[in-house]
Structure formats: structure tokens, C-alpha cells
Length: 176
Length: 354
Ligand SMILES: [Zn+2]
Image (cartoon, rainbow over all chains, first blue to last red; front, side, top):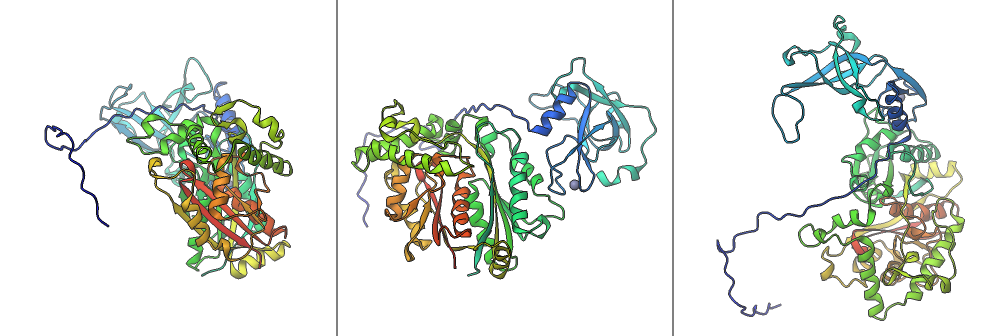
């Protein structure tokens, strides 16, 4: 097969010659309606009343917070409401030192995985009320609720040290 | 080749604005399919799912959905960012290795949460097409227009497909649109995107389905214990036409033709074909491409015009065909799934009783 020669067109000026296009702007905006599931909706509504509502797996008896409809371990629907306490134990943590776009918190700040008393799944929260270099595994913390509650995680402003002695590592070893 | 059969299939009714997140949507059908096959998740040799994060605007929703399977002890698991029919293909390939003898395939889609026709525009060429935001209905209308202009079909042909599909769906409790006015009345309606009218377009559907595959003796044992015929996969093939719409003849689907040939569709007569044609003109294109004559019953379930849960509707075609093999209503059936704009990608699977 022979390819016919391209007819000569008007000369195009490139500066620099034939430089590749390295960037194009294609703004994309897609709008979605959020529809939390049945169990997440129950959890969020409970938060707006100042309660933490988990769900228990009927097979392995673990309590999940936030609940997501099933036990990810057993693959069965969770079936029983369990109120979880707004205090718990830090299982692992992260100190953020690096500024980033959209940052609102003052650096450095601490986020941590908190194993709430009565739950079997650690949950991420902002930790305030202590110098960042004093954060540690096993530290006991309690929730500080926001002034205005709603069906949102913002109903908990942060967790703060509760002053209790550190938890026995055996009490959270399974959740690290 | 390792003989693979579909031994169980479960689906939930398609609805708009389903209550429940993806886990809550898919867990009941997974449980139903596994119970129907007498299997536990921990016994599965392979698990593969089909879904698309763009539908709900949240990354890695397929990882979240794994909570519905039960992931302890660890599963051997994979995922396609496509319709579940393509996950079915992956599972079939995985079973060809011969070291495992069962697989679970599932799919879920919540099309209600965003503007679906616009979301689908983001699967197009990102430099020259997607920035124009051509919505999926407009692209299907372009294809329909080409059929009309080429003298290959009429608006009445489109309406007949829509009417037949939705009347067939009257017998399908999982379908969403289950009745139709007659063709004359349909043709009296105004166009939505000329030449397409509302009846030529699929509903917005949320849904989920799940399927269990098994090989050889295992498939025979599972099926016979439940008094059903295994739906053996006689052939499966997936072909793709160019992505650039301008380089295709939109009135033809050469990839569907090739996939049907490679899947062995024409080796023996077919009793029925479940075609994944979300827009009525697309059924006409597929029937011609695959050489499906009047003796082949098309979409006895109602097809995607009756319920079109994105990422689910293709696997549902395979499942609907399998159910008809299971209970003896069909001896040999073709199932088809599509992906991409204007029937760009086509998967064909031939199922048979033996
Ligand atoms: Zn469990």
C-alpha cells in the first residue's frame, strides 16, 4: 500500500519549531447527590443527637463504627445497634508538618486512629490539646462535641487527652 | 479448554434512587447467589467484580463493596472498571488455569447519584471530545440519525424495539419499565434528542447482580443438586472498535460481528439472544451484525430498555440467558454486553445445555 504525498499547504510558523503541546486545560465538573446508605444514615442521624451508633456482626460479634451494612470479615449484614462511648485509645497516629493547599489547621497537628470503647474498628479523628511530640500509642482520649450537632462527622470537633492512664497494649494489640 | 458453567445467578429489582449504599445493594444478591450454589465465600477460588467509580463520584468504591463478600480468610480477588460481563470474562479466563473450580462474579451500579449522560461523556477522548461534554443520549441520537439517513431503519423500527422490549419485561419482576403503549402512540410523542424519543432511551437504574461459575464435575454436582442444567459457556469473546467516533461507521458494529463469530454463535441454531442495547436503534445494529434472524427470540427479559443499571446490565444479560438454560426454556443462548459510546466494545458469550 502506498501513502499519497501530503499536499503542500501554507507554511505554518512554530516558535519554537514544532514544540510539543505540554498542557491543555479541560475543566471537568460533575455534580452528585450524596445518598448515604441505610446504616450510615442511622449513624449520622445518631451523631446529630450526640450519640455514636455502631452495629454488631451476628457471626463474629465485632462492633463496627461507622457501620457500613455488613461485617467485612464475615460478609453478612450487621443486625444490632450498639452505642459506642465517645472515648477511646489511640492505636496509631500521624503528625502533619508540611503545609498544603486547602490546609485550615495550624501546623503541626495530629490525627490518630482511635479505638472507641465498645468498638472493634479504629476511627480517624483530629487530636487536640497536647503538643504534637507527646502523642503516643495507648493514650486515652475523649470526644469534644461541636456546639451545633448535625448529621455530619463535624459534630465531633476533635478528641482530647482524657487524663486517664495509658491503656494496656494488650487491650488494643488486635487493632494496630 | 476447561469447561465452565454458570450455576447460579441472582439479581435485585432495578429502581431509580435505590435506598442503600453499594454494600447494601450488592450483599443480598451475593448471599443469594452463594446460597443458591451451596457455597461459602471462603470456598471460592476466585472473585471478580465490575463497577465504575465515576457513577457515584467516589474512588475505590469497589474496595468498599468487598465488605459485602466477607474477606476473611483472604480472597483471591480482582475487579474491572467496566460492566460485570467483563468481570465474568476475566473469571472464565481465570478458571481456564484449572487450579480452582469456582468463581463469584458480581456487579453493582448506582446511576441515580449523578447526571449519568454527562458522566458517561468522560469516557471519551480526553483531549478533543470529552471537553465538549457530548452526553450519552446525544451520541446515541447521532448513531440513530446515521441509521435513518442511511435508509437502514425507520423511527417506527425503533419504536417497535422499545414496545416489544417493555412488553416482554411485564414478565420480569426485576425490570424497571414493564409496559408500553402501542407503536402508534409511541410515535406520536415529541423527540427527546431527535430522532430519539423517550421510549428509545433506557431508564436511569440502580441495581446489582451476582453469578457463580464452576468447572466440569463441580458444575454438574452443584447444578444437579438443584435440579437445573448447568449453563455451559460454549464460547466467549470481546472485541473493540476504534474509540474515535469519526473513524467508525456508527451504523455498524464490526466488533460485535467478530465477537459473535469467535464465540461460536453460528455453529448451531440459537433459541434466544439477550442483547445489551441501551438505546433501541442499537438493537437493530446488533441483530444485523450478529446475523440474528427472526427465529431467535430477542431480549425475553426486556433487556436494557426495561432496566439499565450501569455496570450491571451486561452481566444481567448473561445471567438472564443462563436462567433460561437452567430451567430448560432454552437449549442454546447468546448473551451480549457493550461498553463505551455507541456500541464501541462488544462482548459475546454463547451458553448451552449439554
Ligand atoms: Zn463478622
